[in-house]
Image (spheres, rainbow, N blue to C red):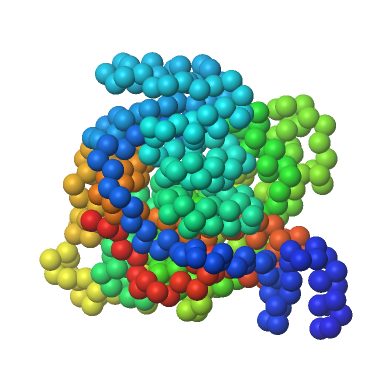
Length: 460
């Protein structure tokens, strides 16, 4: 054991990684500066009209601007993108919808700095490439703005801690724009969990399995493929991890303690680059494997499994599974609930005594469950959300809730610690993989507050 420990320690950069007594690789948790406090359930002054500036108008930004035009009490103040054509196209859309044109900023990768300085902005909405997310978010909060950042919002531990410290110092909201927690199945399942229908949640699974071959060329300057070339691990974990963490009350009564990650070798992405782009690339020099899977254990003895695969010829699968002591919920590839006979009433299924947890309930019962346990925040806006759209409506609910909470001065549904926990798999899975799938400790990003709140509650 001493020899193994010595070998592992020799692989780590002094002062950045260490080996705990339990054999876990640890990353440093910076001491919270004196006078600085956490932002759990942070409330800020109500903003009757939320003035929003959008930075990044490529794939995700235009849809966000369009959705915001359907939310009362929102003013689009500024539009910013590297490319002039993107900015003007979105401004034309605003004008066609009967809104005043916004200020335009474009021309280079630093033009966003002019936007965060604007005095007449309450919220900065960031939809740029991954590598600039945290930099913009940190500066926006320093400039006195709340910030909402597309996924993933941070790629390194330094970026994660930078966002946390800046939010705590400035008392500004920093929310990750994780839309999947607002999908109707996930919201309904969360309500079922909170109502006790599934019993105690013991295990959760999530995934992002989505062949990106038709989309690789759409990313400006090839930033997404470039990141996969240079990094191993689950580089896009938040869609799968976010809903599971909410159902398991992570940093609201439980916390993730450590992870172990494994991956396959890289085959399909290098082959794509050779065939479609005629790149002379050696697969050995492509860092990210075709498939990555990560296992996590929590303080309360629960487990989570997350998968990432953006290159296999597999059907789209944004897996979401919740396994409780009394029931089971599954999103992909087939939606379904499995419940014991005592866990469902005659108002849902007259023959409820025949139910068992070895098969899914019937489509009719599933539909009745979805209606009975519809989450309160979705009830009043479900119809509008489906009309406005954005991945079936979940994007609209995400934006609506963000604006609603800012207008009312309520805590946001997701805080900066959610952002940190869901993004930390990016750097930590790479550490695990580069050390032969060694277990890596997941820091307590609340720095001691993980058990103060008991259960996730959306402000209403």
